[in-house]
Image (cartoon, helix red, strand yellow):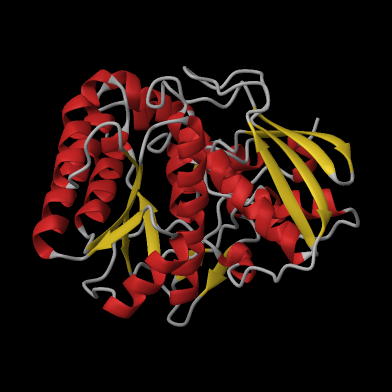
Length: 374
């Protein structure tokens, strides 16, 4: 019975190579990535801009945006109440940063179509403890003759590259261009001593999150194992590929196995992540003068601009957010990160990412635009 199930799944997707070797070319969930190919294909300016905004990076790919359309030129942005990370992001700081990424792409896309995006943040208040049902922003478009943003064309090409990075160190010119595109609250370094300290902090922080049961359980709950799960829920942490499908059939790759700290799937997953962290040769970080919601939004806008510029330069970026999180088990690493980067209260390190040269080319799943409009 298992053999028949296996043959049914791989039927039509096996390729014979020279020498008689077979490989399984299992497709990924293409329908879950259709939004990347539909950007800008709307007649009204609001939907056209939103179609780019939904490609923004967010923690655990939560895509927390929910938009109420008022007209072709007016909308209200909310945080979807079902898309928080209550364990690892209890204050919604990271979710707010993700919404900042969304707003920056929205702004850039609007200008590309000769519209200015007026963004009124938190028109009913600033959500001090966590984002609630009040609006995050009011969006209003009006005609403009401002020049388009040169980074706009990189939006469909932007990626988060979680692969191990090579030993090649980004040049000083590339680092300067990256920081210039991001703005004054951004910082970048490839200094050996600082990189080693940050690698150690990020390594320890990632291990804490993997091995702390309730924090790891939050991640496992958001894992989509295999293309069927990814198609059904094109958000969260997608785990796909030929080998994944085969292991899933045998039960070696499942949410249960990934949650079991004694299972091979868990051990290999943690090792792969830590190896990627340890490969970092340089770091990019964002520091704001305070930890207000407006500052968190600004951090998101700055981060996605850096990510777009990195794409233009051929650089890879991967946020290493664990050490900046606010749950008790991470308190020591949060302090260390601020000490190493010489950031004192009330200032706050909002983003920390490794930069370098990786190999990952895949795009992350996305809910279609209509699914995020109410």
